[in-house]
Length: 200
Image 1 (cartoon, helix red, strand yellow):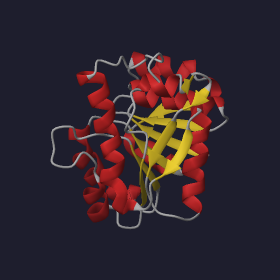
Image 2 (cartoon, rainbow, N blue to C red):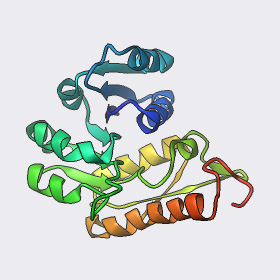
Image 3 (cartoon, rainbow, N blue to C red):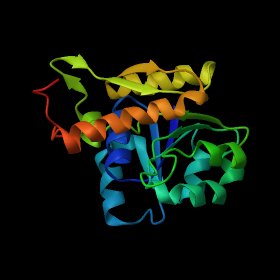
């Protein structure tokens, strides 16, 4: 598959690495594709990865993953609404301080013909890098429409090494976000380290 990743930080970088290794073509969409850190990331992924402007990257991909800070989501969606409409979109960005952590309402208004899934938002990048706990793959809870695009999303989850678990259609987006809240509680309140495997 041709996958666009908006953002080249820890989440986007780690998922891109896994997908490139699985044979997918990766295009990073960033403000400055010539930034040394971006070029270093692309080089580390071999011939299956490249970087360009956000607009060019969206045109490239069949599937678009948003892996940018939550507060930047509304502007990024609105600025590229025409190109995004009709795409398969993975929303992995979290609006931590907002009333709703996801961007489903913005996608519904700006890209009504896109197929949007809430996925890859509930774990830190360390879990994507090493998703096995005592030789058992961690579950990744997600939601979104049924149909052929869902099989592509599940393939990408499997390619990361995670077990896809659908919680239903888009109406379950807040339930998916509650998994993130649980993860935060374990990490911040119960002091579970993000990479710890000992308590799982």
